[in-house]
Image (tube, rainbow, N blue to C red):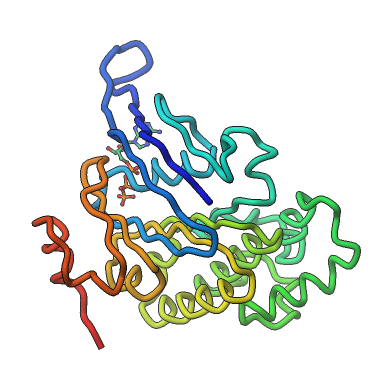
Length: 248
Ligand SMILES: Nc1ncnc2c1ncn2[C@@H]1O[C@H](COP(=O)(O)OP(=O)(O)OP(=O)(O)O)[C@@H](O)[C@H]1O
């Protein structure tokens, strides 16, 4: 279980020597259960990515705590192997000098104990993300956007983490590819029993992938709602978001 308790975060504004600060997160608390898919939805600049970085332990909160199974994620050993991430910018997420195989091996190398048969693991991962094993020898510039993001997803699941933070992971893809990648994420969740923190501004995608959605505005949680109850949201802001939800 991932637990975020009363987290606050500010950034300095106007350069290193000023005392001005912009508070980005205000007392944010929530939980994400094992195997749960939690959407974090909100408008641009509301602090979603900042929250994602705190959850990953990449940055530290000014106040409050982020715990995985009761232990602070700021300790590398707590997050290592348990947490991973997929970001929006797939093109810069893969080292341009690495083949697909090397990019996935880099992630696998973090796994302890090391996989004895890493090459067959890479073939399996590529198949699971819908890529032919021959893609191993390709470089990032030889991949389409959708293929590159599939490689990033293969890398993120390589260590069989308990939780993946997906920060606008489908936003840069064409709509048809977005749907394929969402389907893929749903399938992988079944295979690996992971939880997802799915950060997005796309209510439609969140409704498809998530069990629960946390509605976020100006660095605060406005409302948390189960996907089945999305139509019953109470806040005006959430109601406005719901206008973009098309049900099939
Ligand atoms: N490292 C940083 N230093 C200074 N300010 C930052 C930093 N990271 C984020 N901010 C500021 O914090 C605010 C929230 O940014 P954040 O990227 O978390 O929002 P977001 O909801 O993810 O937005 P978007 O959907 O556009 O990606 C913004 O005003 C941004 O300028």
